[in-house]
Image (cartoon, rainbow over all chains, first blue to last red; front, side, top):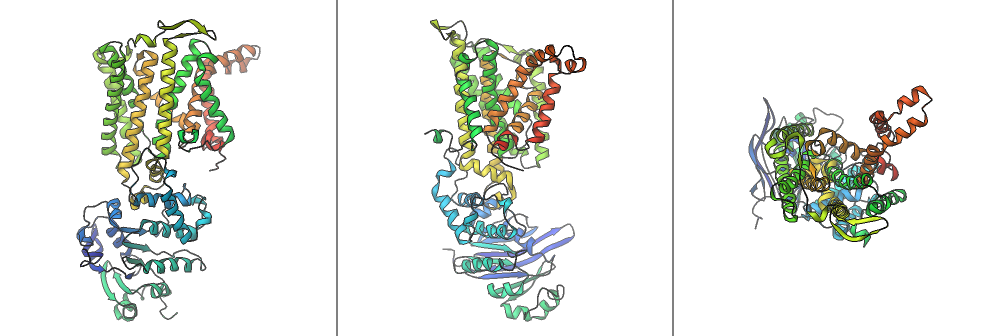
Length: 260
Length: 353
């Protein structure tokens, strides 16, 4: 029924902070079953673009469409409910709760049971099983009873991914999923995202700096520079384009050794 | 069965289980274990305060909302029952209807306060509740024709709940089985049910979501929970339970005035009881309220005895004179907050922060 629409689309999406245009009329469509990397120098507006899609920020003008439905005016929670899922750049969890409880709360939100006042939460076995299933998938199951505050940074990143998986969204947005992870932990997260790619009903958006990560995961790259979309295409083609060489690769010389 | 009643929320500490059981049984058999008017009155106040403090813990400990309007809701419940008994005479239906109306007013007011001010930052919400609660207290004392002003209201309650009503001529264990005893058990069982309801709420899917909202409201919103509704829901629930606790107080005291319900001193006491007992634990309310009320009631007596015993020693005897009880209560608080930052319950459960 919605197959004629791209799963996610932004039309002339713009946000201004005073005189500064952080995201400048970005029009872009994201198809089901694709993984798009969003690149650009720091301050290019990548995270702001994410914030506009997931609703943490309200656009000055322009639209976000999910399966053709305009999301303007909808709260973060309402957008999440419709299928926009996001993992955060800075770890953003429930620190005093256990790992299992963090994921169970996501499954509970998904099942729309949050307003249930009179049953005991631990009696909803299916939600706990769902949480544990996801935790097994991200290899955190043996730490399910630890509180999040006690986890290592890498494990917190994995939990961040687990919560996104448990949300079962149509659009999965990852904001530098491997940032700050140790070398041996990175492949675990990359495998998880690669696994999510196999589900062709979804679209993955990925903000990432590391070119090897982008090349192993993305089938498309879009480049933001000073808030505007300056390049869009197949990874090899975009990386080779002069505008990217100048705008993106020009600023952060160590990060983008293309042939590394 | 028992696990179901307490919603699977075990005390998780052997000593805590023991303490909670001792408090529960002491309150259940208080008329027989501790005969006398003063001790029965203390037991009833402990039962009422456990509910009041637990309802505040739902807000402060579980949802992370600081409100100074809790005594206002407590007062609304008390005045609801008091005004109904005063206006319609001492019947059970007047008592019930007044209680219901009080709870309803509290719910509507909490809903409005929540929707209008929970969007703003936590500190502003605290200030808004402080302003509204102060305004309400002034309003009650000004509308003296209606509320009795500062003097409050004295009224009669149904005869079946007064000492004049005797169920049997004989005494049991030297305790006369009269309406006062009935009133005590009415309060005890209402308090017990309300506490168990709160325990269920905090362990429900809703209650677990409140903890998520407390920990990280930004993320709670991002996984699909409408944070404003959870915060408002918690505010309304805690207001209704506080109002019901106020109605229990009104029935027990047969008097309702600003000093017993609306004063800022009670608000501070509630805060202290939650913190001393342990925030976000529910059992903390049981321990905190019991210790506090006992200290408030008996510390003076205890100090009077100690002061007499140390009559010869000049400075010491002065320091522990009964009129210094507030000073020592203050010292006890500072020490307990310093040594048990997670409250007594947190300490007993071995949580370190």
